[in-house]
Length: 377
Ligand code: GAL
Image (cartoon, rainbow, N blue to C red; front, side, top):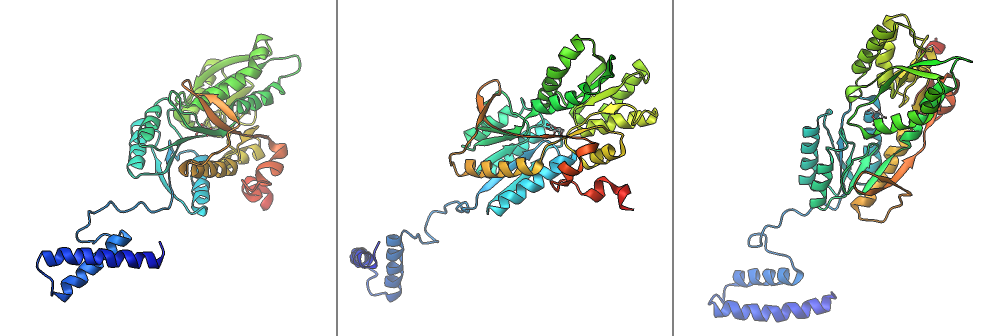
């Protein structure tokens, strides 16, 4: 509004209000007139008198706030996800509020409720239990907050967006690695350690493994001697499963298909106690530092590298777009049992002793000196 028009308005209003004040009998009080004048100008400019104006809640700073609700920080990778995601969002001038639930569904729901109360502009959830977090998505939607499901799928709700790696391919790469090592003319005797039953990814990894193994099992080239699910992906439950397999079969098996590096570590502990470490082929996933070191030493045979840099960066980009209600591109759609969720799938790489340097070291995900400590002396 031009100064000129403002001036005209002020003087008109001034005369009106002065008239009102006079009518109310305080005409010759200079201070009163000044207060009136200030009031008028404020009214014209829409500024309210701090004393009299109704106290509006403090305006939400324009800075976007992204809520990150995590299942756990127990596995090494999740600490990486948190730090990289936070750095990317902050680099874009926005804020991140992180809450971790220590694998407890009740706590995770409380975490989400607290982030909703703090009026985050978008929510990123890594569910402990994909089904249990449907309630969290519904609560967020009631508050008008969009939700991105990070790495693991939230099922049974009208989820906005899903970002993950090609999890079926993870399982296929793990099983293919073993299929390529079936003794000539022989049979591979296998122990299978699946992930947490609460984690939809664990089912996708198994599905990928089955895609490769089923025909080989049918052909008698692979025999599954023992299999079980590792509660909450705990290394100690993987160790128990391996101990039970050894109790049942003795040392007479060739490989352990462990679904991630944490469970591989638990299994290898049991093998070490039996003097079998390095003699039994063990798979993994995540390229944890300890796993990369085991692969360099020969006690673990492979892992699947999922570049955390790429998922954290993409998640920051997508979460900020959701927060700004901007259009975004999601080329895939994955059913979560209620809707076909717009999804973004990222690629992965199988890592063995032969390509450790060309993959995780070259990417800067792991340092040469860390993975091959012995060659540094
Ligand atoms: C899965 C994740 C894996 C693995 C596991 C244990 O959902 O995709 O990378 O680390 O959880 O946290």
